[in-house]
Length: 377
Image (cartoon, rainbow, N blue to C red; front, side):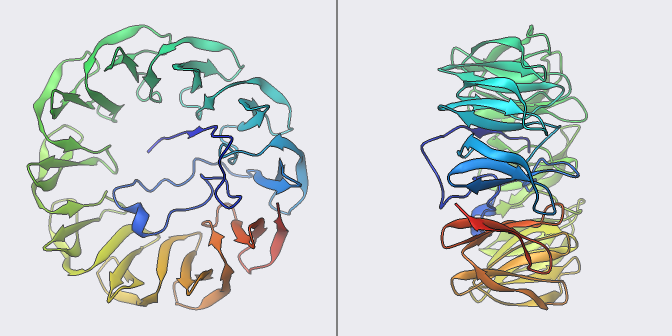
């Protein structure tokens, strides 16, 4: 799922930039799994004496701490990162040069060369040169996908093209991104259907809810039951479950009678419902809950890491976070404790580093647990 971060400058979460701090396993239900939109050889945000700067993977300061800290602090994407000065958001390049002067209340990430921005109560788009490409005139906008972006006008949603022309009139209660087959889920009245890029209804509004597409499928709700449609809008797996997750690595969790199992993309139950909770698959493993404790299963449904943790998160770059007591550490797929639980908060490993918090201070560790950047605030 593509997303962006508002510049909520007055808020912090124990000093952590919101995007970098991962959610607990419990909070991840019905949330798509793309935790970061980052890039190779990225730079990592740090805090030093209350100022935001950036380091490389060796812990060297590349951009001196000088910007205001906010929840907008995030890693670089497409060569730029959001920063804040005097309560307004702008963009810097990898050398720390301001390429878009801080002036916006919100800056999104770039898709198709455009990023959504908010100023006051109006939204529009800027290009990577910092120019306003589509005037701030909408009540709300979503990112571009397949050349179109959903926009809100007088309480209704429609679509514009990359030059700002309205190509599908604003008449929907809600609208999601276009998928690879150039179909978008829209809400008309109380029901959801799918339209093409001409705005024609391809699937009549009949669903009570539609999720964004992932791995070629979107969860849909009919009455009180959930199933899946494919990217052509056809029902691929009939609604029959109490609850579902998104497909990840070809499997999705489903719930029946408060028990969680997993299905494949043709609806076959691969893992019989038996768990109290489940998560998405990542690197061949998924988190599960049994007896109130978190562990991991493999794609065959075999418990490979016994449920004994207070919380557990998905594997990333070969390691997974686990929580024992009040602290978080890291294990490998063999259930070996690679990094002892010692952190109050921690992120996934991304490009070799994980962000951690100790005593309300932020630092970075490598995969051996060695500090690349000692905790600071």
